[in-house]
Image (cartoon, rainbow, N blue to C red):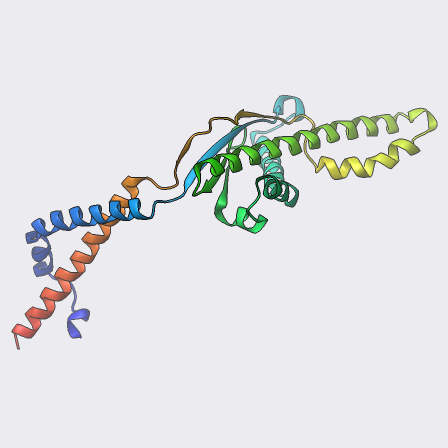
Length: 243
């Protein structure tokens, strides 16, 4: 076993370079095996729905420094992200689509891409392309519904507070009784947030991983195993032949 601890030498590099025909053959065989695996057990389909998110910063926030704009956006994005993964949204999605649990949805079936403003992408994976499309489209639609309700509640809450501060004609009890419910619905979402589905039908559907990925992984794996074989086997033979 001493050959395993022997430091690399120029002979090792020479052996690797001389085996270029082997590298070509190994890469070809590895790529073909990767493609074969792809066709035998293909990866699940992935569908994408898109939602346009606009925070209307010019109306909602008056910054004094660029850093404040950054923190404001980060905070608002986290709020919307929390809604997208909330128990209410996940459970509604599971009930509407059926055949899936909330833990499965959060465990890899769904993927959210949120760049801040502009398009948010809602991805869903499934072996059935139609079901993947339904998962993505339904998730995006439920998200829009919840955010719009939260923004509406937040706007109403602001008007109630303004009315109470102005005295509300001496009778604020009715408004105050509704504030707790509005706060629960608003979830801290800015009333200026606007969301809307931009891609809810005929969604783009692809495989989760491309065929080229399988071919590349197969080729690289074959090359790595071949290198180990050439270095260890030939080195061991050389040691045994020198005895």
